[in-house]
Amino acid sequence: MEITRPDLRKIPARIHTLAGRISGNLHVLVAHSIVDHLDYAGNFLTLTDVLLPGHTQPMPFFALQRSAALAVIPDAPEDALALAGAPADSRPHAVACLLEQGVLNGTLDLPRGIRVSDHLVASAGFLVVRNCTLGTSGGASEAFSVEMTPIVLVNAARVIGVAEMSPVD
Image (cartoon, rainbow, N blue to C red; front, side):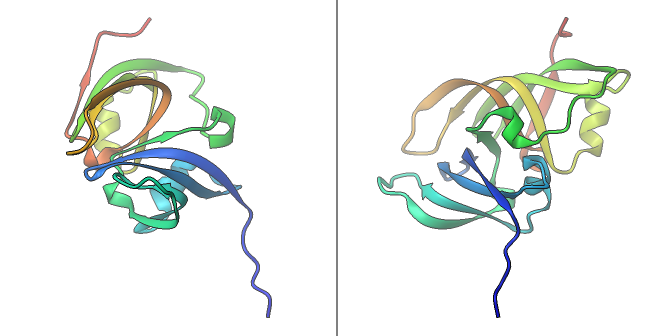
């Protein structure tokens, strides 16, 4: 009996956890966005070709507790992520997210009239933060680092707090 597997696309990503940064490939259903995958993948995210903190050789497979993913930085073009477009009447809100290992500054695109606080109250999954500056300490063996990246997917359940900064024009 032949087992058919769904069509998947490989999305390379760096994932911040309390144990440090890992990198590897997420395997996302072609019909799903990366956010759908992160929000509904079950208790574990499965990754391939994974480099763990303190290791020099990638491991062929690693299962990461979904709730352990603090922030996911996709290393793929935005169109490969299949993100939902911002609503036509949206506006960017500059935010600073305090994470367990650092701070993420960027923008959240929200429909006009929706406050950041109202959006956060209703958010249970991963938030799409754009135009990011991420300052983190990656664990005991990794020094503080700052990086700029177009998109970071932040686990709303693991954010310590969020501040709305001055309006973005």
